[in-house]
Structure formats: structure tokens, C-alpha cells
View 1 (cartoon, chains in turn cyan, brown):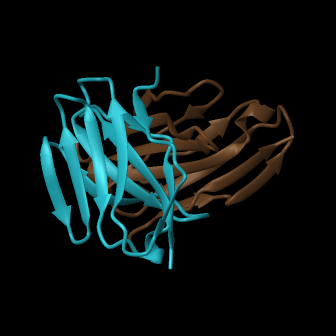
View 2 (cartoon, rainbow over the protein chains, first blue to last red):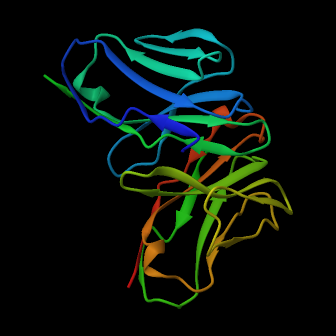
Length: 110
Length: 114
């Protein structure tokens, strides 16, 4: 079983829709929870980061962590065509080990 | 400009021919890491380094070597490449291993092993 499982997608939504991206993890040692966005032929770039259970909001993006259920989510409100990308969850220990989900490819249609 | 650079960006080689992919960062970061990205498998960590002369295996270290003699450089060495190492490789760095939320990725190196 993978340590981090991500809803595979792909996901296709109309512009303006609310998008929900989800990951589950199995290792309780994981302490830091990140979401990266990766455009085609580019390296991943950090979108959101949190280390505690609850919600963290940044503009149209909300990251949600439920440590008791080992479940993390990223919500995108009012999705735009420019949000079309692959989204990767990443979960880290505090000793350098970093584990990524397989990624969910999102397409937002105008 | 703060950045992580990788060279080469594209490489075609043959089985067994040793190669090195270089990675350099200009942000004085302590933490550096190598990943490979394959379709359907996401990003998998190969090796990481918490500081100079400190390296550790990630999830898929077999067939790779790294060294961290200087803070800014973290080369990835394939002593005897095989076709299953054909992949897209990313180097990344962050301030420290405890601040990986600020991890910066390089542009990637596409490797094809024939």
C-alpha cells in the first residue's frame, strides 16, 4: 500500500466550478502537508502548506487537513482555465523524507 | 534571481554509460533533494541531503548515487544506467529539512536510456 494515495482523476470542470482534490495517507509521522501545482513541462511549484488540522485559506484556494482521518483536501473556488494543471499532494516528516501523491490532472473549460 | 538549475535538460544515453546530472542552487539552502517523475507514479524521492556531507536514501535510491561536498551543489550520478531509469528528474531545495514547505524545484532533466 502506498503511503500517500491521491484521487487519480483526470478531472474536467466548467469555468467557475468548485474543485475538490483529495489525498489520504497512512503514516502518522507525517507532519507537513503541501499542495503543489505543476504545469505541463515545468517543475512543481508550491501552492499551499500547512502543518495542523483544520483549514487554511489563500485567495480561491483552501487546504484542509484532518489528521484523525489522515485525509487532506484542496478546494479551488471559482475555478479558472489558468488553474488547468496537475495537482500533487505532498506529505513530509520533519527529517527530510518527502512523499508525493501520484497527482490529479485538472482541466477547467471556458 | 533565486533559482535551482539542472544540467543537462535533455539527455539520451546508452545502457551502462555512466552519467551525472548536476544540480545547483543559489539560495544558500541547506536541504536538497532528487526526485524522478514517471507517468502514473507521481514524484518519487531518490535521495535527499539535509546539509553538506549528509545524505539519505529516499523511496527509490537503487541505481543512483549522490554527493554533497558543497552547499550549493547536489549532483545525481548513475553509475550504470538502465532503461528503467528513463524518466523525468527534478532537483529541489529548501531552507532546511524542517522547512520543506518552501521547496523550490528545478526545471527538470529528461533522460532516455537506450
